[in-house]
Length: 377
Image (tube, helix red, strand yellow):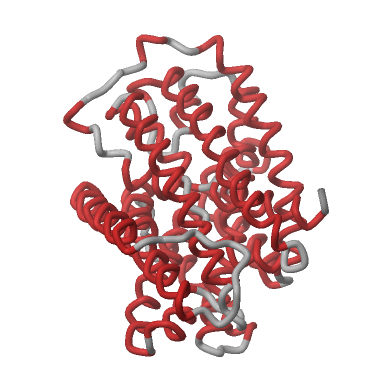
């Protein structure tokens, strides 16, 4: 098992485990465990398939791009503009969600010792993440590997220390009224498309290992999500808060809360790095901006939205999940389908996507998108 393989798996895990996982317990407490488990299982399988589709597109193209660039190559410039707007909405929305949560968690960790407002800690988190992104993919991958290893340890500690506080009375099997409520948030919480080009670059000399890296990088976050959400809902029940960890303060002792806040900060930071790099590369690779100007734009816009007062985490994650999981999913399906016949080179990953399957998946995403937007708005 090579170092780059471990980097690749860690990068995908770190990208997937982010803001979404902290928004899922609240909707699960309303919808019930059965809808959550069913939606998670279905959407993880779909996301795994989507990750392979995107990898097929990347490997079928000779030059490096993000989704807008691939759209220009295989569909034309006019579609690139539309896709770019969708990608920017999804990317900046995700980064804003990570900034909101990162500030909450860092304030919860360090505020009791050093004082200061949540705004200050949000700006600290944003600054650290932006500086790491400035140094590029290798720095991000190395950082992700160590952060992900620590992340897994912290999840285990939270689970072990919280089991004694679980009340089975907090669990609801199913509430039909809210049974589809988790869709957008779960889709957002298990998606990692932004990391796929990074995986392809990390494993460019070991392309045959890419499918395995995608599998484990998608499966491990799904297992962590099941454990984390089940434990949290069992502990907090109706007291589950929008960011999850604030609600835990009302139930668990300070020692467990410290580990929970650490988990929160680490998971948000790892996801922020991948998403920020992805947005930067859209400007850099697909629009030919100077790489430093691209970095400034990718960093400043989400931070600016936060400064302007956009702080509603549930709406930000819900709408972003709908966009990234719905519209971008449809775009990836189209690109994967078209590269099977128009790809510039042979890909080691071949999904064998058929027209019927592509249409069925696209319809599923569009219906989910409409439902999630209605719920979020």
